Image 1 (spheres, rainbow, N blue to C red):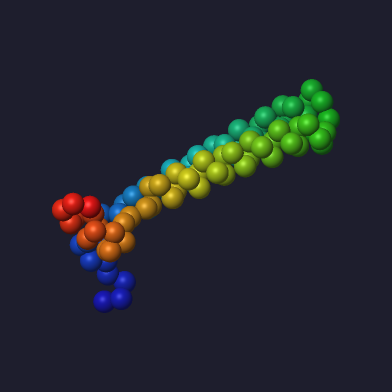
Image 2 (image 1 turned 135 degrees about the vertical axis):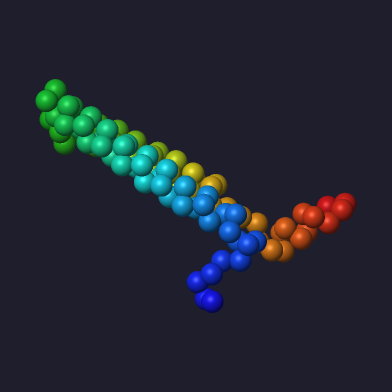
Amino acid sequence: MPGDSTPAQAWWTPLVGASLAVTYELTRQLLRNWLLQTIRAAHARPIFTADLLREQLIHFLLYFAFGSMLLLILSWRPSPGQAEVAAEPGS
């Protein structure tokens, strides 16, 4: 059937689901912390200063890059050609 995965593909499916769950949870917590930090900072200084916005943008980009790399690393799997080449002796 079109939606069925073969046994050779089944090993990486839980990794993709787990990486998506971890990325979602990290992003949710980091955005929540970012929002709380921004609200706390608003009491001490104006919220829309250039320094604060630059700092928050850098944090967001770092968190986004970390989540994206984590997702890519956890969801990577070799293509069938790479697996065959790696299994050959002398390579």
